Length: 484
Ligand code: BES
Ligand code: ZN
Ligand code: ZN
Image (cartoon, rainbow, N blue to C red; front, side, top):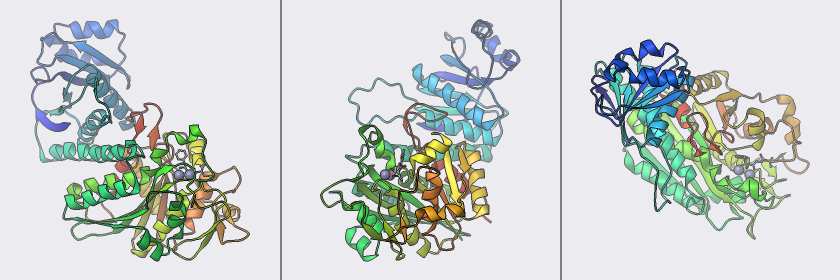
């Protein structure tokens, strides 16, 4: 898919589909275009009782009366959340109608709107079809965002919008890849590739010997049940004269069977998604060298399978995390917090100004916020605020959950410093957050529980079924905002 800025009249621009936006006063909005097709567009929309509400889409055959084969009319909105959805739906409908090229009407649009349209066009083009012999699906190959005049800001808006979306699609591809292929080693090889793509990025990958020598007992413990070796992945990006150093930590469980505390068949089906945090970290890195923010980013990924093999860690085992704290394992399915504990300790040793972790950590977070919302928890009010604002600007839903001190007692253990589960049923996302907090000493830290929005069972918002790349947009926006 190629998304570009273009100029030209709507009626004379060649494309398979011309996508236009129209609100309640669609008759007025579309009058000029309607004249070119002899009033047939207005008659069709009236017959269909088109309202111009966000989410409304109508597909009109032009029969050669203008240069585009189809006019796709989408309900307009000034609210970016609604506009995102409306634009995405219109682009998908164009694609479903077999239109490979789009002209997107954007005369008079703000740079924010131009960027949003470019981003949605790129997302609408996404599909995961590496494993299909015959692919009957239609493709989008090119989209031109039509403005009245070219300018550097508008070019940049299109470039950044499509860059953000491509980074999210990169993460989607990693998550959609079946766990049979997406092993810790495979994931690490993708990180090495990213490191080779740009001189501004370096990548180090470590295996079991190094991991054990570091004292990462959480990661080693979880990895014991698997035939696949764990990997510890570190990516480093350094912009020009960096003003801040940020550590991004990702949960990289390439398959979560639950271990000996085995999941049910139903719970296990989507568990290739358990490396979505890691995928988001890698996705962000694919964009950094083009975005060139003036910061330093250290990506830290702990990657392993969670399997119930003969050597697997067992309920009752006690693991020692890299900072010396011991954890009693009461449920081997609460594995994410164990590997993240080591990754957070490693991250803080890099002396960052901020630590942000992303993890498909708890089913409880999905119970609390539903499946399209990230749970944000953390120790620093200004970092939380910046992250929530970036989420808002990216159209990714996020909401804060409180790390209540009075729940701290529930993670106490009789035999070790803390325990990894059996905290009781309530507030599971928060208690997992409190567990992670034990492994960050003093650095401002935010935890993003993406268990809900990382992977969709049905289409929602601008997400297709399957992996969403959720988190990538939020982080890239956070990084492109001026950092204080
Ligand atoms: N990977 C799961 C969490 C998850 C659930 C992600 C649903 C995506 C969708 C995690 O490792 C897990 O199994 N958590 C347990 C923790 C419990 C045993 C304390 C959970 O949430 O049930
Ligand atoms: Zn689990
Ligand atoms: Zn998990």
